[in-house]
Length: 129
Image (cartoon, rainbow, N blue to C red; front, side, top):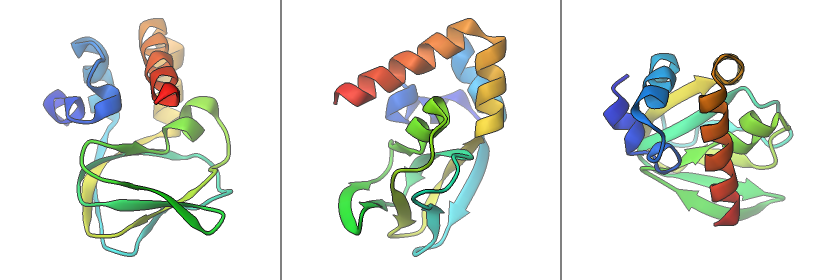
């Protein structure tokens, strides 16, 4: 995957080029149809999803808490904090994007302290929003 595509995802846009390149090598392109459940509340955190096209709805306890689209990411909290999913995410239109497996992110974070620190910073900044 091209690092320029990762830069279009808000939470990755501030990462240095070399860190983006490491993530890009692990990213797998994906497309899903409208109605596909990307993340199930209470499930294990296996993938981080980057949305390049389309929209998804985030639902917690039966209530819609967010509608996300191009440039957004879902699943980062569960991946980076190693927690169960706290919400369900469903495609509200066809979605094009990429996934990065939790195991790949974990391995990269172990191997590269700079990447680990950069990802933690991204997560902290997002929590403040």
